[in-house]
Structure formats: C-alpha cells, structure tokens
Length: 489
Image (cartoon, rainbow, N blue to C red; front, top):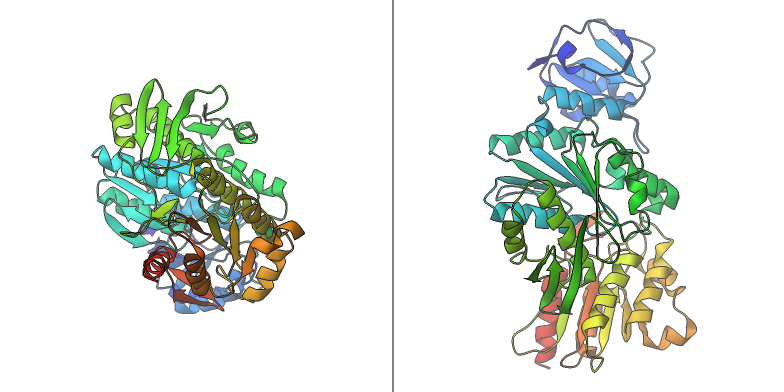
C-alpha cells in the first residue's frame, strides 16, 4: 500500500480537489476491477471513454480519480486529480507505485516494422545461454526465465508492464528484452519506464490504418528514441534509409550496425542456404541456424546489443552460433521421407514478404516450384492488400490467395482487394481459396517432391480470428500434416 501523495511524485497535475494523504492499494483503469482504496484512472479512448465510468468506479470503492476532465459534480470524500494526458501520467504513477522496477534491471527495447520479435527473442535466448536470469516481453509470449505467460499485446499496458518487471526482479532477472510497438509509443504504454538501451531494426509500410500516414508512423517509432536518457544507448540499422532519423534527437549514446555501409558494427554474409548462414562478424567466422539476409541483420543487431551491454566478444559469438529461430519466423517444416520444404513465416507486410521470398529465391536451384500462400488481416491497413498480392506474384511460381485473420470482414472481400494488385500477365499463376486449411492442402497437392511452399502471414499464431472468435489454427501443424498426406498420395 502506498500513500497517494507519494505515487504522484513528478506527475504534472493541473488541478487537485480533495486530500492526497490517503492510502492507495491499487491503480486501475477498468472500473469493473476497482476495489476499496483504488486510484481509478479515466482514460479517454477511441471506442470507450473512461470518464463515463467514474461514478461506477467510486461505487466499487475508488477513493481517488485521475482524469482529464473533472466531473460536474464532485463527490465528498473523493480526491480528484486533473491532468492533461492521463495515459502519460499513468506511466509515471505506475513507476512510483511499483518502486521503479525498470531502474533495477537492464531494460532494452526493440522497435521497427520487421524483426522485433526475432531480435528480442534471440537476445533473451542469448543471455539465458550466458547463464543470466532474463525476462522477455514479445508478440509471441512473455517469459520470466523459463516461466511462460501468454502474451496479450506486443507491448502490454504500463500497469501490466510494471507488474511483469516486478515479477522478473523477484525471480532474479538482471535483463529484460521487450518489443516496443508504434502503438505503445503513441498510447504512452512505455511512459515512466527507464530503458538501458533502444534498438531499431527497420521501417516499412505498416499500421497506416492506425497512424494515418507513413510520416506519423515514422514519428511514432522515433518517439521511443527521443525518450531515451543520456545514460542509455541507441543503436540503429544504418542500411535502412530512416535509421539515422531515429537518432536525430536522442540523448542516448548513438551506435549503428550494417551489412552494406560503414557502421560501428558490421558483418558480411559468406554463405546462405536452407541449413543456415555463415557470417564474417567482427573479425570472426560463425555459422548460424538462421536463414536469409534479414536474419543476418537480426543476428548483427543481437551481437551489437550484447557487446554494448558489456558482454565478452568470444562468449557472444559462441552463443550466437547456437541460437535457433523464433517461432514462426522462417520456420522450416520438413516431413520424413519427403523432399518438399515448407516454410512458415509471420510476414504480414509487403517488405517482410519481399524479404522472405528473396531469401528463398536466392537459395533455391530454380528446378523446383515456389508456391506462396498468403492473405491479409481484416480490420487492418487495407492499402497493403494489393501490394502483398503483387509481391507474391513477382517472386513465386504459384500463388494462393486465402484468408488470414479476417476478423469482422468477409474473407472473400479481402481477397478481392488483394486481386487488384495482380497484373494481367500474372493472373494464370493465382488461385483464390477462401478457406485457409483448404488453401494449405491445395498447395501441398500441387507441390512435387523438392518444391517449396511458403505459408505467410500468421507465423506463430495458434488461432484464426473470425467474427470475434479465435478458432484454434496452427499454420505449422496444418502444413506439416498436409505435406505428410500429399506424400502418401
């Protein structure tokens, strides 16, 4: 339990009504979860405005209310706190309430359009292999050492974040690696956190349904680095033309990594095949189980971060050579006695799809077919739909357009929008199959021994979201089963 006055330290208050010398047992922004002696934070939202639930929170036991607009009728015995930005101040309050856990371990944030999950996961695995207690906050899962907690968001709300960090500290964690989404920056979900370092992978066309413009999306990513302190490090991909933009206003120590240009950390690809990569990295030659140029960038980012965190070069290089891919990221599916190669990848942006397809084409012999199965999520950025289909056609021998997570939209309507990106000369190679399972089975029936099937878009996800319901569906399992059946045909 904390005193309200203590958890308001450095909060930018505009107006206070009531006393601040009262106990607070809990901070909450969901009125349904309010208990006695709760500070209820009324967050304005795009769909629901927390100000509408202030009275309900008080009825349930809230003794203090933080809001952007004071109610017309202020109840006796309740402390009202008015602020300009409730989401931002919630982060400050959460840090105070939980005794600043982000300052007690080394918290590293990873942002960018593609590679966030892989980089954060590889950093977690690297530091675990170096015998550290480590936490991970990613799209796939939250981990505290080997304890897994199901992930709800790429970056959870700031109250959940602080709770996770406290749990990590209680289990001896010295490091935490977390994905920082553009949504999280704009929505102040990282407010009040102290980062030891920030890493930028790349930025491409994504999330314009939320941010509106590409410039706004870039600004959101940059906002993470703008928040870093002078004690932190900021490392960016110098080969991305917007990498330098991320560092323009940061107070942190600036570092860069690259494969193609001059940078503080550099690597060169010596070999690239379906068995993995051979890299010349910081004067040493290492083999990795990861495949493709994009994973060379990911590995270089991981290596650079580990060195900036003070780890021994030889120890890091040795550990990197033993790392395995993150789930659903260029995840190879092989079936005994079958030469067909299946690849499951989370690629759900045009650039990510290009990366995966270019990687496959750089490795393949061209004596085999490359069959790509791809869809686009519903209720998300519609502008990328035709581009995704166009990319798949340009780099594949056959393309099956199918359903991804249609959410509230009709799958057939999404596929129709994707088809507008298919040029007339490419049309003969395209099939549209709305049912994702049938699309997978069809691809396997079309494949001959030695052919390659790319199943893109959902990666690690173990569900398909249709009309608000998450139906069990695992791309890797379904592809593996379908390849096995087709082998026996």
